[in-house]
Length: 134
Figure 1: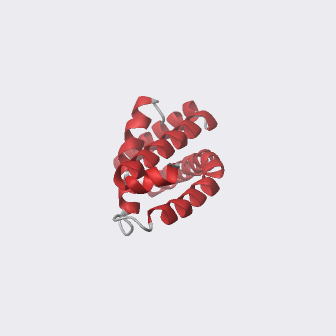
Figure 2: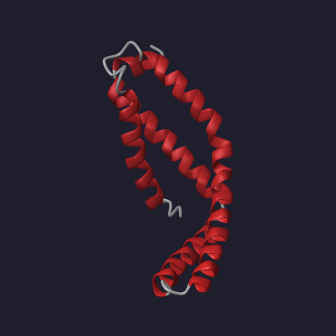
């Protein structure tokens, strides 16, 4: 009995397990291929900027400075978040295509992606909390 046969025999359980394993791998890649300290600093800067924006609602010059600082911060955060995407994008696309073919003959043929997404979101929150990924 191959892995595909097992997945077809237990489609709901197998898609949830696959989603959890993929999410674990992606979380670990994110943790080890990004500068977690710098990302934490940038998020703190963004929160401080949001507070400054609320305090300086009428001062357009100060708001422009704060918005520029937030934009710079957001751009750096985006650069940091792109690194794990470079490693995971192609394998994830190939996996999704393979999974679609595996689950086509099962009773969850039309809904397997929702099982995958929901279990992925839940496990992502759990793994980020466990591994302290910012």
